Image (cartoon, rainbow, N blue to C red; front, side, top):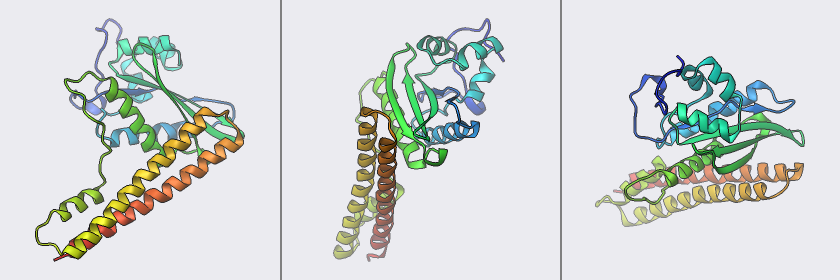
Length: 261
């Protein structure tokens, strides 16, 4: 169904759900460079949209299939294959969104590199994110980092009565640790051990995100070379190790606190 003759700034509802007050983000069709297969773009799009939806702080991401269903054939040909600021402004007038992600994927030193530009409805650029794709895929943890960056930008610019400090959603393990520590009948020794292990797990998870963010900033500031792509990939591997270890410690903390009398 096209929007010809319809009021501008229409809200597009995904999956037949009722409109909600969560910010809406659209992801444009990935632009693929020479040698990049279509499945690389589709996988990137699917994983990024899933990570964004999992934050629970954004409305379901508007993917190209959703945008096609809301635009006339003329608008589809004119806007969906365009990455200019003018096209983003026009698209934002037709579909109500707070942010538009323009994705391009190309080979750099024989390895796929994704470049994500976040554009506001007025066409202004909010951020540019460069992400190496080992094996042609966006890793789940790096997808989460990118999704959180999108959330941070959207919430920073979203008008609210009172600005709230952004918080990293606690993992299920950390929540269980907090509840267990507050139990009145726990053994003091097991309580201390479990709480210490839990803090260690939280620290490792936080360190994984800090490591990945630092590597990403360094990567963005340097010319794109094979060495810089390898360095970023190595940092991602370290971050995944820290993240996994942190979750394991969180699980041990839960067990320790559960066994305390």
